[in-house]
Amino acid sequence: MKFEGSPQDLETVVCAIGRSIKSSDDKGNMHQIKTNEGETINLYRTGTLQIQGSPQLRSKFEEDFNSYSGAPKAASAKPLEHASPATLAASVSQPKQVFVVHGHDEVAREQLELVLHKLGIDHFILANSGGGGLTIIESLEAKIGQNSTATSFGVVLMTPDDMGYALSGGPDSTQPRARQNVVLEMGMLISSIGRRNIAILVKGHLERPSDADGILYIPFNNHVKEVVPRLAARLKESGFVLNPDKVAHASS
Image (cartoon, rainbow, N blue to C red):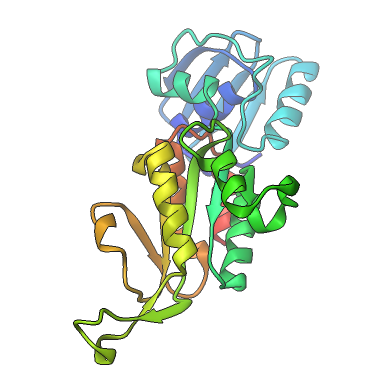
């Protein structure tokens, strides 16, 4: 087995698949994790992952490890004896659903959907839902209104779909802009879940809302996969548990 992440990433995955860590130590040419369930996991500098224990334990661990999608097993997760507070928080508090805001660039939206799918992230796109008989604004309020608990992270995809200028600047100051619905929904997300739980992806050059200065923008040029490392870092900061192998796959 191969693992491309750090020992800390491995600890996160081990906890997320329902094991509790008994010890985690550097052994020179490898990092060794022992679980209370009986497995010994050796991560070598080469990225080779070796599982020790009974055949039944090894088989079950490999099955859980290979099927890991980024979400912890809430039913089987146990308290961690030697885990850091950050690892403990990540293993027991997985955010719910990512709300995606997008404009008219369907190619970029499909690229983002593919990236989130590869990361194993559950996401919601209003255009893909039936709406349940609600108007668009009612659907938005249900998902990202201030009293909603359905969403805890948002990805805003800003693409140059419109052109606009200030009257004071005249037509010569025309710049590409995101759709007005994108700006509106971005504001609703900021109000509902806070700017720290939002990643704003910006395609190419476009005018950014002046009142949104100070918010983290993640630029890309041709494909959404360009932003995967920074998007993954933002998700982790918000409490998501991500499989490093899936992050690498989403970037490729």
